[in-house]
Amino acid sequence: MEGTLPWVARELPTPGSLDLWLLRVSDVPAGILDEAVLDATERQRAAALMRDADRTRFTAAHVALRRLLGSYLRVRPEEIHFGRDTCPCCGGPHGRPTVLGAARDLFFSLSHRGDLALVGTAMVPIGVDVDLVSDATATAELSSMLHVAEQEELAALSPALRPRALARLWTRKEAYLKGLGSGLGRDPSLDYVGSGAPGGPYPPSGWTLLEVPVDRGYAAAVAVRGELTLTVPTVTRLSGLEVAGLTCAAPLSETSSSLLTRGPTPLGRAPTSRRPGASAPAPRAPGTSPLLTGGTPT
Image 1: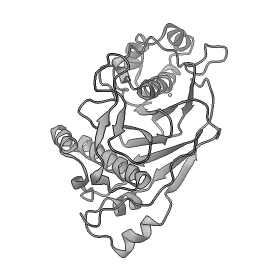
Image 2: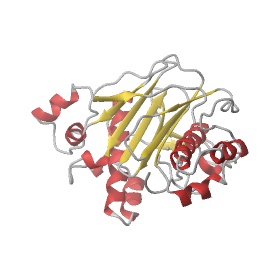
Image 3: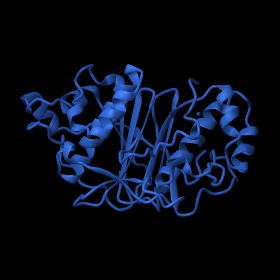
């Protein structure tokens, strides 16, 4: 564990900005993930997953999160201890995830689904969500759980357009609820975040909602409290080679040391809209909140 270091020393996001990081799990070579940087709760949760693909995705996402946070906070990833803010819905100890005892203030959010993991960081509350585009049946079921104005927007679309529109809307909804710190503990029908249709109601006051460009068959979004000074934030993809070199438990080699000095590969830029509005398996159903209990992020 002596060689387990954050891959770079990163500067915190500036006020009014955010950082977005995207990982394709299949890019990470098999057997390279260093589970030793995870805490006991994370390892137990990974072991409890039935499918190998689910365990790999969970482990890759959490290792990447810890290394990113470590690079911002100037600590080793295994030394990060997660906690929870108070839930804004019930006052219980299962609200927004935090890093306990951090010397620098940093808000973060993690989401993973299918082959993708998305991390967002900012100096203000932030929520991210990535999901697969639903099929027609799941689209109809999930639509009934939305704000009435959102249901009307989806109903106005042709059936062929609804699955992707629902995925875009649902990820915006979950990103916002994660940013609030409630997750799906708050009824998703209470707040309008919209599909981006012209003339519709505005998103929740005081929040900026952006779509995040991701791989085909997926939708993703980020919610940030307040205004953004950067209107086109960059999404950075963590490549398989970089993640492989940065998840080794062995002491740093010449190869992995060089990786510590390189920046990750830019993926693209997210289109901005204060009122943005998405074919493959279904999104998470309500009840499987991305804000998990137990002191660790998703």
